[in-house]
Amino acid sequence: MGMDFRDTGLEFDQNRIEELDQLRSEGYSLYPPVFERKERITEIREKFSAVGHERSEDRVVTAGRLYTVRNHGKTIFADLGDEGARIQLYIRKNDIGEAHFDFFTRFIERGDIIGIGGYPFRTKLGELTIWVDDIVLLTKSLNSLPEKFHGLTNVEKRYRQRYLDLIMNIEVRETFRIRSLLISEIRSYLTGREFLEFETPILQPVYGGANARPFTTYHHCLCQNLFMRIAPELYLKRLVIGGFEKVFEIARNFRNEDIDTRHNPEFSMVEIYEAYRDYNDMMALTEGIVSHLVHTICGNYRIEFGGEPLDFTPPWRKMSMEDAVKELAGLDTRAYSLEDLKKIARDKGIEGYEAATSWRELLVLFFEEMVEGQLIQPTFIYDFPIENSPLAKKHRSKEGFTERFELFICGMEIANGFSELNDALDQLARFQKQDDMRKAGDLEAQMLDYDFINALGYGMPPTGGVGLGIDRLVMLVTNQSSIKEVILFPQMRSEGDATLKSSGNNEAGIP
Image (tube, rainbow, N blue to C red; front, side, top):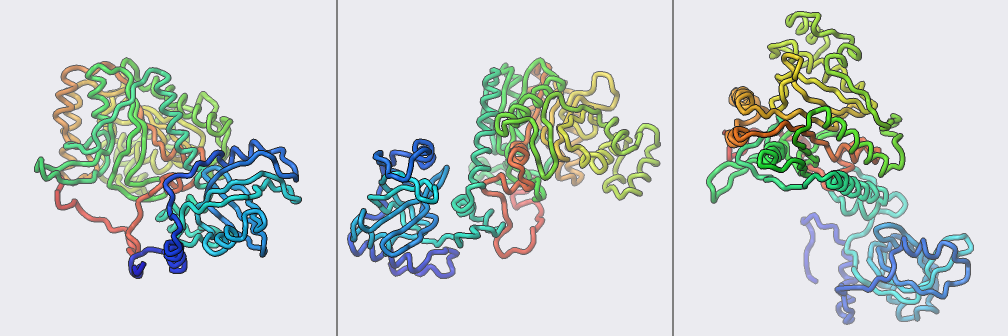
């Protein structure tokens, strides 16, 4: 082909390029557009599970990728794999003819995608095998697969080249099959209860719905800054205001924050709102969804995560934030003055205590640092201070608190829900406070969304809402300790860049 692939990052095997040139020169029809596969390998395994040592009279036609090739002179054994399973092939020169056999030995190798026809039988060692009588090369692999016995083990390469990870590691494919099933089950659970699914903007003129730093871009036609959404909350609430009473969105969100085993800048969540409900109803809905997912996918309410046995059998434990800090951290925050609480926080090495202006703000810090990690079994923590809950309704009986909850499992926040704030003037005042914090340098404070306030002015019924993190749910049901294992293409630093650089606002700016 005369192409130079050096310094391109391509991993093409030059010998395979030459084989491809040879095939073209011999007039072979490369990359056929279709292959009439009659059975998948899983179907063959099921249909012929009782086959004996004699060849079956039923012929099968299937296709897949070659994972191993073992040449024994006039006989070849190979392993063929598709999306769901692998099966052994038995190829004899006497059966497919010298020309086809010579073609296979010259041009077909590990990694190639082929179509085959033949008859299932069981070898003397008891392995289900296809006695091949026809072979077609469907796609020539120009890259060599990793060494067959150890596979792809380099973690960084697995994440950067997820396609290769999926080729080599069937258990990784199973993780993402489960992810797809989990999302489908969420959708089915909600639509089966008359919720309607909607899509709201990802590019937004005003970001909101969570305390997070956004990604910023610039639209040249409109001549304005736009933000990648950090949450779909404020748009879904507009739909409730407009008259839709049960809504949800399975959303991709984007937050310009740290990357670690539980955070990725691009992540998935399902956000749900129901009119005439409160945070108690949302806790019940969350418990129903998550327990259903665990039982459906794992076949049991009891699973293991990171060596910890977990029991998702309803009902789950519920604790107020105050009670959780009192019981699990041994600290009654109401019994101390603000200065004494700050001294306790300083002595325990808790960061951020200096800026606290109320004991409730310190309550949150104590909870995050001293309690979260102890919440192993599914636990709802409810009644959050108003200072860090700008979108939640004021508590009906506890001054200075809101009707907000979070679900924790193995120390991870899985869900966050409220009795939604529907007082337009109260929301305006809280947004103004957030906006002041943002202008003072808090990059995670929310913007003042006047249009949303205006929408609230038309009246939103009492509403409950909750957001569930899909990536972390997948981590739980697949027993994966890193979020990168459950996101197909996680964000990675540029190859060769040894540091994760923290940059300021981009050139479009954040107003």
